Amino acid sequence: MDARTISYGETAIDKLVQWLRARGEPADAETIARQYLKILRDLVVEEKA
Image (cartoon, rainbow, N blue to C red; front, side, top):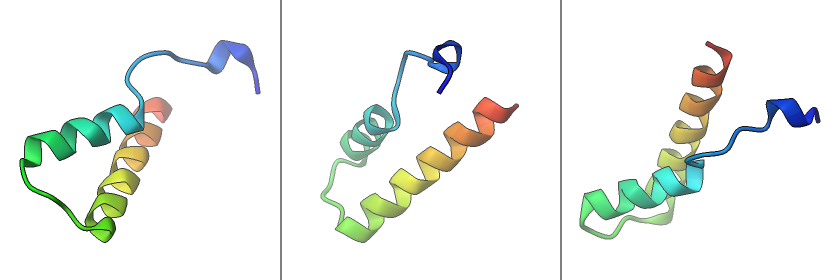
């Protein structure tokens, strides 16, 4: 891993926690896992652009 490619800032976990708080209601494990994968996919696509 090249240290130049490391970026600091919001992580996928941070975004997941924000999403959970914004929901305002509990979510089951499957819903949380799907949202986490969506966030990760979005971050990868964003980084490639």
